Amino acid sequence: MRIGITCYPSYGGSGVVASELGRHLARRGHSVHFITYDLPFRLARFEQNIVFHGVEVPSYPLFKYPPYLLALASKMVEVARYEELDILHVHYAIPHAASAYLARQILASAGSGRRPAVVTTLHGTDITLVGSDPSFVDIVAFSIDQSDGVTAVSHDLRRRTLERFRVRGDIRTIHNFVDPDDYRDLGREACRRYLAGPGELVVTHISNFRAVKRIEVVIGVFASACRDLKARLLLVGDGPDVPKAHQEAARLGVGDRVRFMGRQEQVTEILSCSDAFLLPSLEESFGLAALEAMAAGVPVVASRVGGLPEVVGEGEGGFLYPPDDTEAMAAGLRALLTDPDLRRSCGSLARERAFRLFSSEVIVPRYVSFYEEVLSARGTSGEGPG
Ligand code: GMT
Image (cartoon, rainbow, N blue to C red; front, top):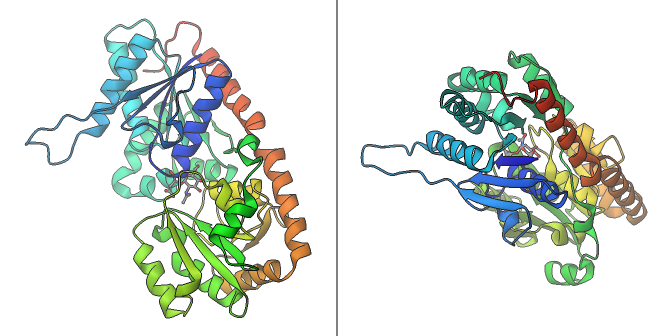
């Protein structure tokens, strides 16, 4: 198939999933065209069957806000026309699904015989936070409804979307995935020597440091669980709440035990030298970072919210707690850190679960079948609802 993929190419789970999906589709012989404003960060090297088409937004003194949605739609039209795309797969509804709708309409009115089927993957905040902003509800609902196929990254997100929006067809759950090859031969010991002192336990948190991640709870749970333990907290990522993290660490007297790692392109090695992964989010449609931790054999301590129970399971990938019960979370983290046998057994269960349920081998074929279903539902003429 010829597949166009649009995503946020910068750091973030939806961009990682879209890039990895593109890479895996390309390896299976599909022709993949990324239509994004930047080269997705996981695609810096040449890969066969992948072409990058950059979206450039024209600037003009009149434009207070650059018209990205329109620039993206124009690029989609161009790529769909010249590369004869079968599928236009957009990750994150806002504004990508609206651009794709517009592109399909333009192609239809121009009488282009072949129009790509639009597939939208919902990642979470496009529905739960941003998409539910009253000013966005109608346009999100409309563009989801107009997609030829819609997927959600967890059953929980699927259910919440169906509750909130009228959608013509069904929504298919296709979970996020990891590539087991990325978790082989990690330089665990060298990495641990570099990141932690001798005999020091390592707790890791990875996020975009936004309110929903509750960075103050990450610091609080670590401080409480590790008060008398030789332990270090690695904070990976960047975002508006970094200053809050510094302040909270200083307030709780753990400033010298928290290491700010900033944005990291590859997190597998950092994870591989961790003893536990902490994700006390208020909301998490999937929790890709938790899955990556599990794949690295690291047990997860997280909130029982959104799609996290589907990813972590109860007691398999780690332990889940009500988001408000931070004392229980701290106790769970402490239990893991003080019991090497528990840590080891949880780590191997986590890894086994990650690869059994969420490996690229299992998930990528589900996307391929979904594309085929969507195309066959539209018939062979390439005509869609537009
Ligand atoms: O809004 C965000 O938190 C970023 C967004 C993203 O683009 O990475 O995260 C969402 O999508 C990820 C990939 O599917 C999921 O793993 C995250 O759980 C989800 N974030 C939330 O639901 C808060």
